[in-house]
Amino acid sequence: MKAVDIEPEQSLSSGLIARHNRAMNGAVFTLDTLQTPIGMALIATDDQGHLRILDWQEHEVRMRRLVGRQYKSGLDLVPGRAPAAIRKNLAAYFSGELGTVDDIPCAFGGTDFQRQVWRALREIPAGTTLSYGAMAARLGLPPSTARAVGLANGANPISVVIPCHRLIGANGALTGYGGGLHRKQWLLRHEGAISHAPLE
Image (cartoon, rainbow, N blue to C red; front, side):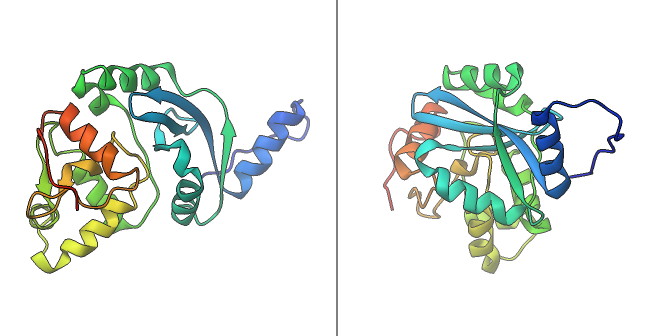
């Protein structure tokens, strides 16, 4: 995150000073919560209104560890309110307006390869799924990279909006999902991609 120059004579509250000091040492995101039909979501946004994290409350420890790896200079999550448009679009998605998440601006850390996979995930339309091998092929990679695609998929910090749940096993099984396979199954049913699918 680019440091912000603040003149010494500027009058800042202690809270703003603390936030500025944290920003000088790494990424600072606002952390909010949103109740959904499949549990309490944690949503983190940056100061430009980009969604940076969407995970689930009971997985907060795992989420902080996962995302912390993607921001080597450090990460600070400060309680606050996400932009109204992001909250509105997420609520609309869970109410059945599936396309609303496509309009949510996202930004992320991660490696070049991870970012390549995450951008490609957003191109999978709601109501459809791909296998890990098919995603590798879509990226112009050999089938042997399917496992690497799976690992990048599993490191996705923005559930639902970057739809990692739309990647499934070659046999149609719902394979691992950081938020829990019950959520993956619910999301795919909600989107009309499956009526049922074997859990793996």
